[in-house]
Length: 372
Image 1 (cartoon, one colour):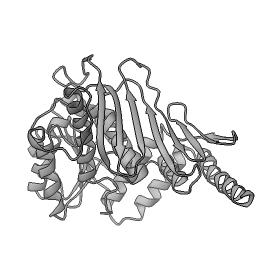
Image 2 (cartoon, one colour):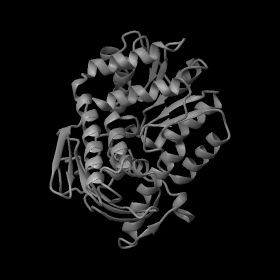
Image 3 (tube, helix red, strand yellow):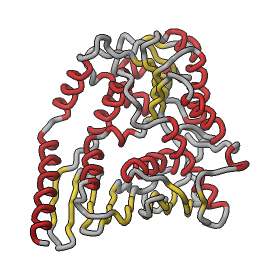
Image 4 (cartoon, helix red, strand yellow):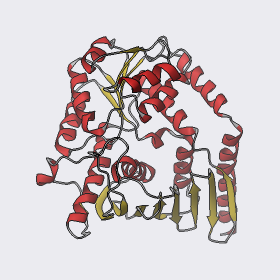
């Protein structure tokens, strides 16, 4: 027994050493490494961008980090948003007057990044596929209604097109490190996860966490129970967009229990999660960039947890993989399942916080929700 414990401690220390080494690498170095990867390609990446708001700018920043990559043209219904891409990131970018003009300008090997509001995601992706575009980077949530999203997934399944959904945690090195720690048995068999994010919408942030849960534990969400907040706060993207906050419980098909707290009563976003195992727990504070491994014996290991800069690194990595036609880490079907879990939360609220089994069926599939 002592030998096994010593071996486990040695493994944990080795894993934490890897995390410690990550801290020594600056963002500039990571970007340089990504540039080296991109230089291995005969063609520099070209990303055409629809939607130049917050996420459009994050995508532009990620493209800028890749040496030789460009954004030749953009389109946004608000020209002032498109102008920001020119002013801040790519002065040579052409601002197109319409979506149609942008899509017609995209050459066969280029990437289309769709960072518009959720109500147009599926429609733009379908039009792009009609135009012969075969590399699409699509923002989450996948859409605002399940049936059209399902039709898009089916079309992708029977085509040579690649769609990457921007659930970026799948590409973030520190999140990959947490998954490796779990798989190594560092805290034993996993029992549960509790995520305390703070006030946030289920479509805007909840979809990320639903996808993160599925990916982290290689599991499927089979049932959802939600307590949605009655408060409806104005959305800065427009008053017609509504995205409720609240608390959610999830049942996974591997028996792991998950709770997510995105309640309106917590205006400060904590961005903190804890994973409980048979021999210890992992505490990850993304806001303050710390990770702690606490053994049942009481012994504690703590390290830096690179996070804020890693979003840009994750996006850059995803774009490189899409440009090289690598299999998507997050498929359209993954995006669909995250959207489905979000809609199941609203269905649970309508039925007095009842457990809602997945997959969803019936009239709920056709309902359109006002997600941003």
